[in-house]
Amino acid sequence: MAEHWKGAPVAQALTERLAARADQLKVQGIVPTLAIVRVGERPEDLSYERGALKRCEKVGIRVRQFTLPKESSHEDLLAVIRQINGDREIHGCLLFRPLPPQMDEEAICAALDPAKDVDGITAGSLASVFAGSGAGYPPCTAQACMEILNYYGCDLTGKRAVVVGRSLVVGKPLAMLLLGQNATVTLCHTRTADLAAECRRAEVLIAAAGRANMIGRDHLSPGQLVLDVGINVDEEGNLVGDVDFAAADAIVGAVTPVPGGVGAVTTSVLAAHVLQAAEQAR
Ligand code: NDP
Image (cartoon, rainbow, N blue to C red; front, side, top):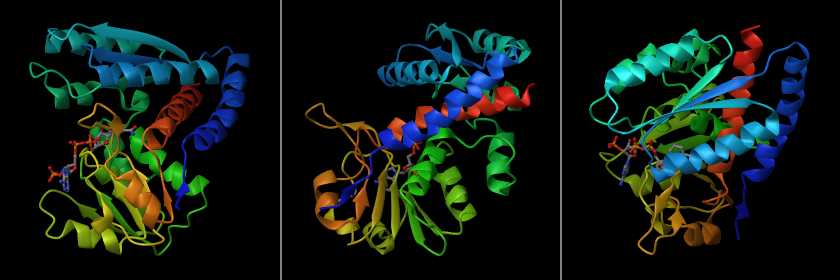
C-alpha cells in the first residue's frame, strides 16, 4: 500500500508559522487583509471561498468579500479591482476565474496591482515565476504542490518529474517551480503522443488535467510519488481526483488523496502570500 500524503499536516505546519507573523503585524497596527472577488455563485468557487475564510480566520487575516452578480459588466468588475488597488488596508486579492464571457479576463488580471496579486494571475507574477527571480507570488495551487513535496521530504534534485496539464493556473508555473528545485521536468497535455509511457517514466508524477480517474494502472509504476491536483465529480456524484486512487494505492510509493490532499494546502499558501504582502506594504 502507498503512503497517503495528506494535506492537513502540511497546511497545519504552514499555518502555525503564519499566526505568529499575523500577530506581529497587529502589534504594529496592521491587520493583514485579503479581498475575495467572486462573480456569480459557482459551487466550486463557493466551496473554495468557505475554505479560504476558515483558513484566514485561523491565521488572523481579515477578509473583505466583493461579490458581483454573474450578469455584471466588465466595467463593474474593473471598478472593484481599482477600488481594491486604491485601498491601502487591502494587501492581497483573490479573484475567482474563469470570468463570465462578457468580461475580458486578461484585461481584468492585468488591472490588478502586482503587489496585491497573491494568486499569481498577473503577467508580472508569472514572469517572475518563469524567471525564477523570487519576486511576485506563484499561483497558490502550484506552490501548494511544492509545499507538499518539501514537507514530506522529497529532494527533487535530478528527479524525473512529469506534470499532466499545461494551464497557467497549475501546470506551467508548477513546471517552473519544479525546475527551480532541479527536477528534470516533462509537461504533458492532450497532444502528448504516449501519455501513459511518459507518466510511467516519472519519479514524481503530478496530475492537473481535470479528468476524473484518467491516471490509471497503465500510467503508474512502483515507487512513484504522485500528487493529484484534479478536482472532479464522477458519475456517482463523488468528488474524485485525476488519479485512480485504488490503482495508485496498489502500485506507487506515495499518493495525495482527493479530497484532503493538494486542495487542503492551497488556502494556507494563499494566507502565507497575504501575510508576505502585508509585511512588504509596511
Ligand atoms: P485547465 O482545464 O485549464 O487545464 C487542463 C490541462 O490538462 C490542459 O493543459 C489540458 O491539455 C490537459 N488535459 C486535459 N485532458 C487531458 C488528457 N486527457 N490528457 C492529457 N492532458 C489533458 O484546468 P486547470 O489547470 O485550471 O485545473 C486542472 C485541475 O486542477 C482541475 O481538475 C481543477 O479543478 C483542479 N484545480 C485544483 C485546485 C486545488 O486547489 N486542488 C486549484 C485549481 C485547479 P491542453 O492544454 O492540450 O488542452
